[in-house]
Length: 394
Image 1 (cartoon, rainbow, N blue to C red):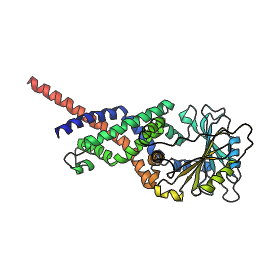
Image 2: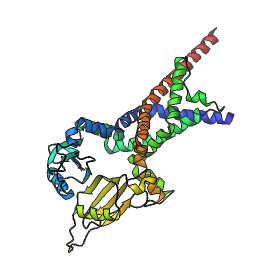
Image 3: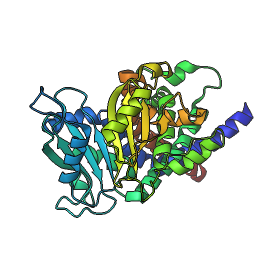
């Protein structure tokens, strides 16, 4: 018991100084993370005309016509496209054009959204999602995203937030160690004492908030490391399981005359791997790049909980290069596929999203109560020292 208490004292110091050093920034990422759990619903509510068309019947334009319209409307210089597909009859196709440098356009966008009507193939809306240099010119959810994963500090901020996630994994684990009841009295840990003093209430709130959100916080922090430090995360995973290399585009010989439309190539891939609802497509700016089509709710994958499949095609000839789903790849690949559903809570539907939302709110609660607890102890130590010095003078 004495040895355990000595170890807990060490972990208490780690826990305190990590909280004091990075707690405020983690509170910010937690709060913004709670907002972003429902970012899509929020964005649709605020920008209905961008997502919805007034036409709900008629013949739909082909994928190639939709993409051609978007490419013509976008300023030159984009490197890749993310195309969100409508999930209902009144939905628009929503393009996200990524510009690695400041776009040569009046928008100066890093990420530019362009909405295309699926029935007319006409541009019906556009907005800057990420501005190239001014955070106050991001759209609202873009503002929250940049603050959440990069603190408006660019690549340096992304790395910083990833490192903070690692440190807070240590902080959460240290909190578990110092809070674990050695006597087995879990009621003291999991409840807030009624009619307690302010000091005791603050202590109980900090401890209970930490324990009740422990598993979700560990899950969200780990997946946060994956998104902000992907290369380092992959390296660690590869120590335990092999990972399938990312597909690379195949360039055709200069003499080749093969020309396959994306719609035709996708139709052929879906013949071999049918099922699911089209969710989003991504494609490179180069014609000899990759085209990725992702589908959700694939019936044959529901036994894995994650029922999403992505088909990676070669743009030049339409050849299927890779299949990303729980049925293909190693255990490490499956673990990587779990990271976004876990981080967003989408793996467990509304229950999971609400749990992630609450865990984000718990971050500022833990920071504030931890800071108050530290100030209380510091004040108590100072008063004890004054009392001892006063007794010596008597």
